[in-house]
View 1 (cartoon, rainbow, N blue to C red):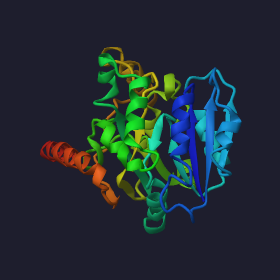
View 2: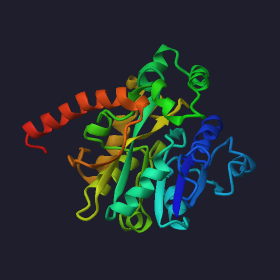
View 3: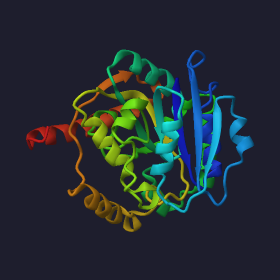
Length: 307
């Protein structure tokens, strides 16, 4: 079984799109995949309606977490421990809409690779990174028009046509990634790594997802697999980091917490992944940009003796 663990905080609008992208009807060739969706509502002052969550299908469960904590690390770990599946698919930010091949591709990876860590690339909806587009008037209303126009509910790969930027400056599939908005891993491997480090208590978890990504790809045993052509698409929701202007971005605060916990500065792990999947037509432009700029990063890393 595949257990999808997704975390929400005060984003009702975004949740309805995200949960739709997790349904059996949206995910392609998922009719024979056994899965559950655990929707965490992490202390929202405007919580989701449990009936709305359950309406997406019998696979959906709702878990409201009464808390004053601004970091979802502990809540996500608890949900992962309670998950019934032997494999986990974790989405730390419920504003991410999934592409429609993730369940099938991730399930096949678990069949063909040993103890894999499976990463999906993240994109920002809108004309450019939302940290920049917010200064130019990009908001939920503009985004709603884009989502309606592209018809993503009928074909989720059309989300590529309204996504103007990779969320990660690692430049997508062919770059040196350091974060994944949607990743999969065996439950026992997740727990063996300690899950998300609950010492990360900054808003939204700070660099907790980046920290886990680094530890997962640094394992001595276990393959690192990138889902080619699949990803998640970040909706605008006033996020503490993703929707802050660059001048107001809390990176300094987050990085200082990381340094206190790890005793070093954050740095990418230069490990190349295996690739699994295919490129839908809608993703070809993103793939070309990723190949051009992402591979250039690897060339620089090799020249510097870092990879």
